Image 1 (cartoon, rainbow, N blue to C red):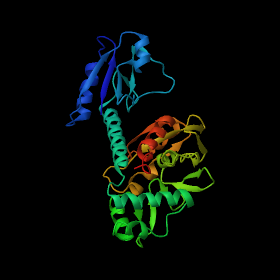
Image 2 (image 1 turned 60 degrees about the vertical axis):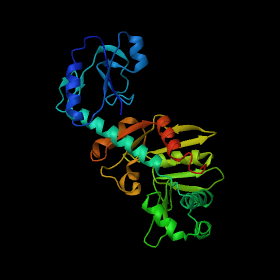
Image 3 (image 1 turned 90 degrees about the horizontal axis):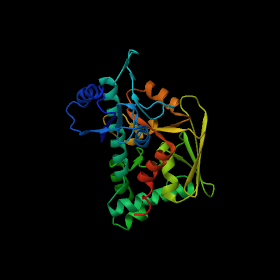
Length: 307
């Protein structure tokens, strides 16, 4: 995690921000870089909306819609409503925790692809079945048998690694990004096959994984309004255009299907996502715009059928 403070020369709020950052980071060792910004042009280029501005991995966690870049003094509102030259320790800790949780989720999901040849072959057979029929295959014994294993053996290992989820009878219920049961994220693939995704990021990753066009239909969990993402020739059109995705996970780990999938949703706008996040303070995460959410989906799922 990269933490940077943008500020004008001799900004009196920088020492206050550094002290509070030290408290928020506690025993976490992270280098905090300071960058002096001397003019409005540079402020616009680096994303400084007043001095000091904090960037975490290049993102301002305290950004407010409509605020223009500037070299003026920046004020932050505390929990009790008063204004100050730096965010409170609590708000800093919350922003850093959410970013760490989101990064951990990205890295974990990106690694959730099997390396063992038998597991990879069975996994890809399941993914292709979902893409072709909307459901998992009735059996993977033939694929597993080519590696001198049974389907049940390979499925059990994939389940333990949380690459898939099987029920008590050994039937595939989940093969990220697909769900055998209906979810809030419906995806119509080119050719007419309709499938369900486990979460918003999974839905966005399907077209990249399959190299196919798709139409994603979902709803904002705060207001029930419909949201559509149409992906054609690798380009996405969002309706409404300002829709965003919340990416987060419950602390403590565990299967993705239980720990985070229900928390990765699309919202009509950033305000709606913030409302949901405030109502679920136990789920740390971050809000991504459409382009960043698409990139995350590609990163996680884009290569699953190419290996």
